[in-house]
Image (cartoon, rainbow, N blue to C red; front, side, top):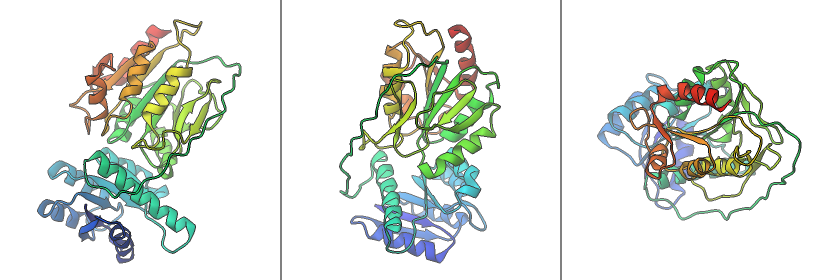
Length: 352
């Protein structure tokens, strides 16, 4: 696999080069010192994948991503050290088509440095697999973790669950921005993003909506007028007590956290209106994204009485996940991005 490196620092370029060449079957396509150079080199010699920094002179990584994805598309993984102070730029780049983001690996020989290199290579393998590119043969054995399920008294609220991937941050911002502060329902979001970026995503989305946006915390019940974002690389699930939990089960799923894993736990534990006194609204939505994560879970939710929505092709950055849902009949409605917020409000009024 031919991988290009875009970074203005010689030391970082060399670090990434050594990591990539340390994997059998990986080669360096070219290196670029800024976004403008990357756009030109990509047009002349398209690689299999680009590792894109964000903060660079002449043209930053956000604009370079936008130009590349509009002119000569190529899988892009954002690799940056400026996560906390530039979270908005990370999600802006993902909104333009970058597939994922990861921190620049640490240098040195310690355990943390080795772990950071492993995370980068794992991200590369995942994107390569989804794009049909050759990958190395390295793999991890699954480590099952059975969550402790306990029952406690809790009055469920109306619930909206949303899964998204490529282009998701911008799509989520558009949906949430149209919802009022007295929404009277909880929202849970599974966005394919590394745990290092989850707090930044929650903070960025919080500025886009009158609703409160926070990370989903282990043991917490969802509350009305609050948006919860999955916060780790483990999968967010519901327990039988209707509290949030995280599990490393389904270790081999291409993306973490998994939309399918969460949706199926929702179907298993959230009250079924036909079998309980619960009368709140239940809406499940699958937004733009590569692959098919969430399609099976959306189908299960529809079978258990949830109103299901998939984003349409025209408004999707990548029409993969919602397409899979449409093809298997998992979505009761196929809507443009601009129509999803109003549809949520309409269905919740009916649900109440």
